Image 1 (tube, one colour):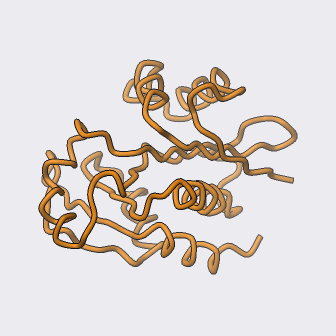
Image 2 (cartoon, one colour):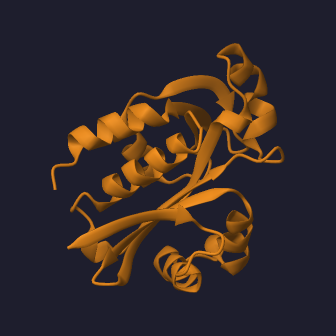
Length: 177
């Protein structure tokens, strides 16, 4: 049985195992130890999926610091809807062992970390598609309830928002296992 837990990434008891898992699953220099260390310095939540104590998935949300590339681009839009970057979190990524795909684990991790962020006083999840991942784009279309900001990121991809509560509601309805 898969167990999903959430906690702050910084000081997580499984920190090194999480780093090793992400670096292995991502199979990319984009997610090396230094990137994970940077994320741990932010107020970040990690959802960890464990199968009999072995990490099979992780998903990270983090508060958007003032120097995050989306903050200056979104400031005007966020102000127009009564928010600021302090209300927002963004996701680094979802990593899942391919052998566990199709079991609703990514959905359960997204619900758990969204609830954690909501409990911490955040309201909105900001997403940029600039990393060019069709899988991320498809997953966010699947969740639905996207708010178009009319703002693009460095890669010319649109930045979208979604309330954390709508993420929880949508994925809870879709997750049956």
